[in-house]
Image (cartoon, rainbow, N blue to C red; front, side):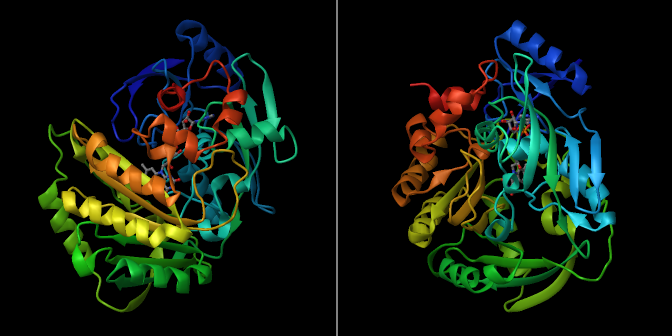
Length: 440
Ligand SMILES: Cc1cc2nc3c(=O)[nH]c(=O)nc-3n(C[C@H](O)[C@H](O)[C@H](O)COP(=O)(O)OP(=O)(O)OC[C@H]3O[C@@H](n4cnc5c(N)ncnc54)[C@H](O)[C@@H]3O)c2cc1C
């Protein structure tokens, strides 16, 4: 077991984690029990791509799984892979694509472990047709900190299966996972990109096109106001059928240092948002993209989170139920554009109605909006407090994987199953997030 220091992706809150890297599944029980004995509790840590405090241990001592990265079995006839929980989505893509398979669900970064993808029950651009990651998990092995292991599936130890999917790492350490992949005929994605001028146009495009395509997402210019409020670029895509299976290893640039102040500010945001919007001509434009730039544009800049400076940043991601979604999204965008403190990475997407097995899964049918904000002293008490009010009144909810501010009372209202998870929580596992949202 070796040690290193880690933080969450947003680098806020700034609780530095001492990480113990476990190398072998056979040693994991002893490594975890050592941490619990020494520090009272611990938490699994994958690639730390969660933005807020859900991946930070209450004890600030985590067990990192990235060396538990071996494939156990693969069956290219059925597309079922069994792998250790530290295997990343990138690792899976690298072996799956040449064999004609792809991830059934992928978030906007491939630097995510299997364990992390299950614990946050991540969703992607095809939520409306495939649901969440947890919908494709066939089985996993769960190690409890007392040394016992439980094999969980939709029929075996169903209570632990459901509590662990979206269970924020609190029910045990996932040791290995059996995942069903999706067959594809190409590594390319056939796309249509459409510039739209208002939120209402986004809703019309989503109604017209979502059900016809595997993938659907929109980028919006969150600084636009008045008649242009909610303008952006709508993107739909489907796997091509050209039988080309090409892994892409894009050259990456890097943010080498953490500047003392954020380089993302009013001025740079205005320029970037405007440039991106205007780089897309009006009308519908067909194209073809390799899977890598299509799904993972941000992965092409190493350590892009450093651009937010030493204070870090917070992401605000909510989902607004269909019935109130357009009105509530409009109110959110008005509140954000008024501050001038918007995000270049504002993403709008429709979540579908496929129910996840996970007790605390985030998506509900409606519109999800995600924006990044440089951390500043008044952010939570000012802007986030106004946004929370709109989300609450609309019947929506916030995403724990991205969160560093949700109030305990709001969390309990959003996730009424939280007590069921708490009952199955391993007493040796706790996070900064769980402590924050469940303490009175
Ligand atoms: C650029 C970017 C884009 C993103 N896009 C999306 C998106 O489109 N959709 C989406 O849903 N999310 C998205 N995310 C969030 C990301 O997918 C999730 O936070 C994911 O869970 C991170 O996985 P990780 O391996 O880094 O886990 P970590 O962040 O290290 O940990 C996340 C949780 O998983 C638990 N965990 C990790 N390993 C195990 C294990 N072996 N056993 C038990 N619990 C474990 C941890 O305790 C913690 O609670 C994005 C993040 C980034 C940085």
